[in-house]
Length: 441
Image (tube, rainbow, N blue to C red; front, side, top):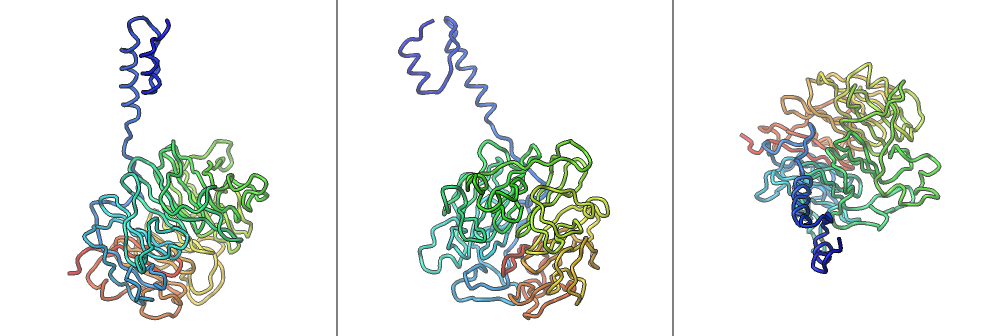
């Protein structure tokens, strides 16, 4: 059959393929359109780590605020105790600390940022003097349900499984861009065509866990943190170029003592390291920098591909991991907290000894529901809503009122915490952010 000029125009304008059957072309086209609409309808994604939008709170911050990362205005350079951040008329469900900035999520799925914006980490215009030191809204397409933040980048996951990110990745030689097109000052979609259920940011890398159980990575690859780039290509992609490391690529991993491909159900990051939990067995795999035993593998070899971690998979059953620059903190399914890696400044919480821990060692804490880490600090959130902090005190991240190191877990106190329960804690480069119950009573 020869299509009429009218039919040809219809195909061109609407992108519809007409079946060339006499008298039935348009009907078939309408049926096809209907099927496409059904197929394109997105289901709302969920993950156990997503914040509960029915539990809202206020944002508290302490530590250094010299570039506005505390969100308390241009005149506040530091806070030694948690201080209340005013995000006017917004109910906050998540607050995440980056290297020198903070990202907050409302119960409506909107994102607010404050702090250093030199390389686009805030995702908004801060040309007005002082505007970076107060919370401001980021515009993106969709409803946010989870956040992550690194040294100079931020990301949000929407309820349709889309990832938007902004800012920049860096390596030992400086800026490398968020994408091959450079620094992104406004949010861009990072992984179109995939449905993502969880995101995690290291200092300069981003991991995306899909609903299929695959992990995509992008960013700096120098220490092996991408889990898919051989050491010979780790510096800016080597002869393959920046596209190789900045365009998200899937990580291939085979199960321990098997040739079966591993699928994951959770993913976590440190400054230069990455960790993931196998969906079927709950085993932990790790990759990246390992110069202080922080991967838990009981050696000092960096990993450029995921490796099964016996100490986190068999000796204990890990529910979540967070990591700083050279140490990691783990929470097991029973609520016990473990630390591993570098010991200086008390970041492991085992007293005055500066010795490394080759495998995770348990701490004496009440049952906990979340752990977090900054560069050289650690946090544990108890089931009763109290935060314990320990490690380097120089930046006053520990909320103790002093700048002394704390070598064993100490409960964080202060006026804003007297009658509040903490919902979540996040450690940044030089500051700490808490989400706490809204009303102090």
